[in-house]
Image 1 (tube, protein in one colour):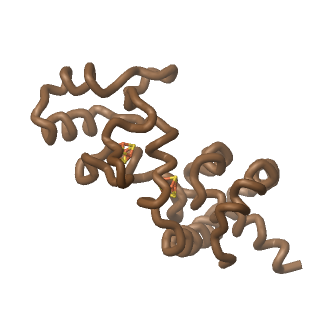
Image 2 (cartoon, protein in one colour):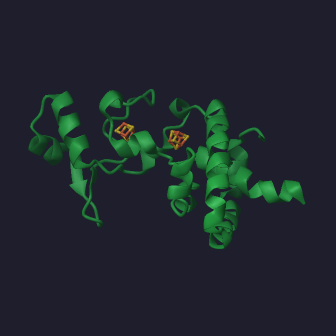
Image 3 (cartoon, protein in one colour):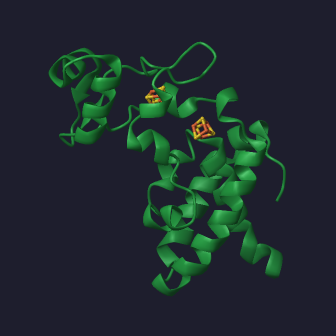
Length: 167
Ligand code: SF4
Ligand code: SF4
């Protein structure tokens, strides 16, 4: 895998987004299994190079969905009633989902750690949805996440490079 470069990400993200959109348009269902396997390997390699604690772009830019189970778990952890937690920390977005009401997230610490890490929302645990089947299950989502997540940029860039290497 080519090594991760923040400069490449900044310079190439628009081009990679366009190329990935075309790639997805032509992707056949029968190719999903192979792609998921490749994504699993690339995901592992990307996070060996990229340290989320040095980045935290997702926590600074994208309000995560906080589902009912998340709300109950986090409210309990904070010693609050679910309704109090919702009023203080959440809002309802255009899709009628509860999301964090502050960007960057209220629970993001100065050192980029998460105050509620052990009980964080499922959406935070699963982001950026690039591990194996998660990658193919969220195949269209990665286009927008290329803007926010260097790992997504790097994984997608490597996937786009595969046919080029063979030719
Ligand atoms: S944006 Fe990606 S690389 Fe950055 S902290 Fe979030 S998951 Fe990690
Ligand atoms: S809850 Fe934690 S992991 Fe999720 S966005 Fe906030 S700081 Fe980041």
